[in-house]
Length: 481
Image 1 (spheres, rainbow, N blue to C red):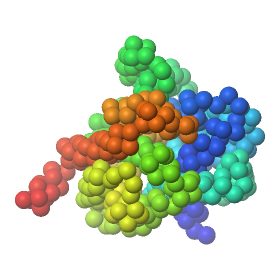
Image 2: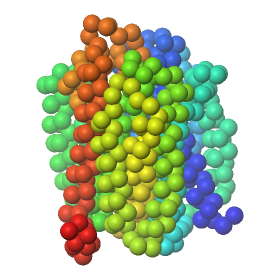
Image 3: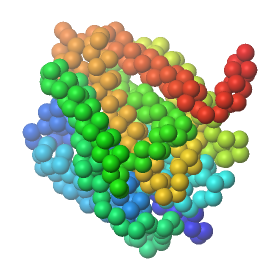
Image 4: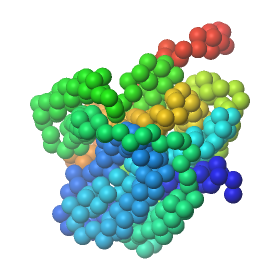
């Protein structure tokens, strides 16, 4: 096999496993909550949030480490850690153990996420990178949706522990394959001292802001402690910038943020993650909750059209962007997804598969059209020695957006549905009929989808403003007129 296809195959398995694991666990949460001792609604939610939180905090750090110590080496380590963490999660006996073992899993997933795009960018020529990154990006989102079906099937047939154990043979094979077949194509810089203070301040600032948002919305954290955490996070971020300006070996190359293409891609990818991160969670509990009453498997199958649309449009859009550039596919993908969310904001207490088909296809297809050209623009905008950092920072924006999206969705839904009712729905507990109203819950779902559409449209505006290609903006204005 030609090396570039070998690299694509292995990295696709890596991001597929790590992204699939998020939703394969999500669909099994009610069963996990009932089976393990000491599980509360807070613990149940943090089985998901803890995984995303760890990935968000360490991705940039791991991306920079790969630039220094070798991308393939740390990518292979990620496969091994993810496999070990999966095995341990399957043996968890209580709430503390499964959340702790998920941290090990997330650490491995972070090594996979932070290095896969850089390995692909090294392996493929410029005129094929969009296609390669498109296939790889499709596996990320398709894995998260496919996990719903696979998780529902496994949990129903052989038990939730097997959703972790199925990773073991695949992980062992992929680890060995990566170790023996992948190779470093970019020269690793001469070993330098690590920016320890930069690593710590950045990680702490991301950790505090995510904890503040998620704990305020999904737990009983009061507003004052949450605000204190946000202020502390901002102060740490300011300190981090000062440290980076003085460091000989900075974690961040701050000059890259003067690149408008780099900025436009990352700002857009963050807003899209912020708008879409809670979508699957909200839909799963809309379908499995008191309104529709679907089984885990039925809910997963219901969402398949989105996965199919994304899987088809991702590689196509990547190939097209290799020929015509990334600007138009990015804008088209954003607008298509926004249209899907606007249509979803009109669903009622119950829906048919036919009613959901067009919105789901638009959302999934828009994701596929947008993702690979946007990622390609980010990776192509930086020097080869900075690709590990660029891959890590873009993946960090995605995961930070996804994590914050869950907290924001809860906050929005609480505007029309009592928090106690939402806690019961999202933890699989019995719901008091006195506090539950179908119309209120549907209204809260509508608000989430409208907020998602608004954030995507805002990302369109930011992308056009940030884009350095004035001719492209003029062409879109003429086309609109």
